[in-house]
Amino acid sequence: QVQLVESGGGLVQAGGSLRLSCAASGRTFSDYAMGWFRQAPGMEREFVAAINWNGGSTYYADSVKGRFTISRDNAKNTVYLQMNSLKPGDTAVYYCAARNFPIEGSAWYEYDSWGQGTQVTVSS
Image 1 (tube, rainbow, N blue to C red):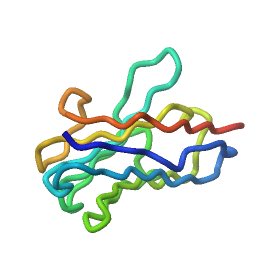
Image 2: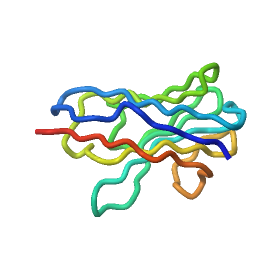
Image 3: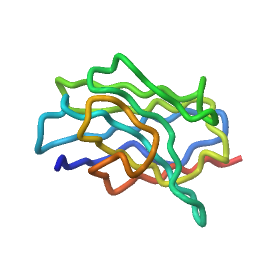
Image 4: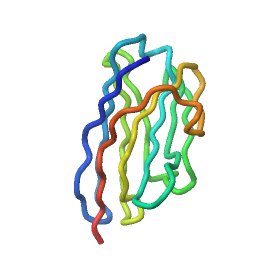
């Protein structure tokens, strides 16, 4: 399995931006599609965005499309989530996940490794 460590969460006002990072180690990063999921209190974990092995294909949840951008740097073994125009409804713990397959997926069970999560809080 690949080990994942997220960073970049925090408190931001509505309309603001944050950039999450997820550093991977332990296996060949470019073998993996990567995804971001989030979980708000009392809610199920939900898909946010995913990217294929080389960054050539991305997929977004409708709720974040046009506001969030997923990207990756295989030379740095890192995947990013740029979040703009944040809303209070984006408040959640954000998780990075790795799928041992080159094509991205949107279901949590398609992913093999998970980070510990980073809290994002958007105030109104």
